[in-house]
Image 1 (tube, helix red, strand yellow):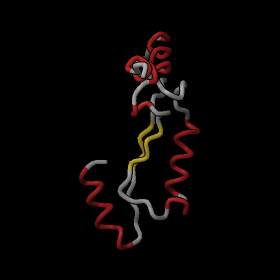
Image 2 (image 1 turned 90 degrees about the vertical axis):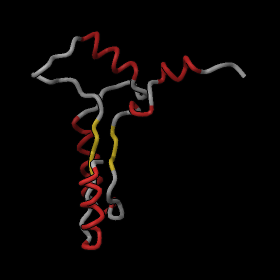
Image 3 (image 1 turned 90 degrees about the horizontal axis):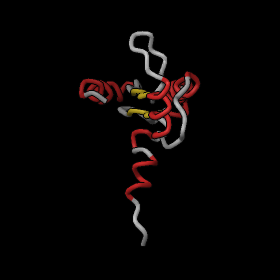
Length: 99
């Protein structure tokens, strides 16, 4: 989360106003720069959960942040990327060594 958003979260917390961010994962479909099928396949294969994000995934994150379930959450970034930000399973598997 950007420094100005964190400052806003700090300043507004006393008034019960929460400031959070949502960071969605890989979701091909841009009409500005189309991706090849191979690029999409390779990117999805590297995501630990093995699929691209959907509108529903992002919507559920927004619903959570807007609900009372997150009433004590402020200054946070909710990452919805199927584990992509923690690294690909292929990379982790390749680094494993037998005990």
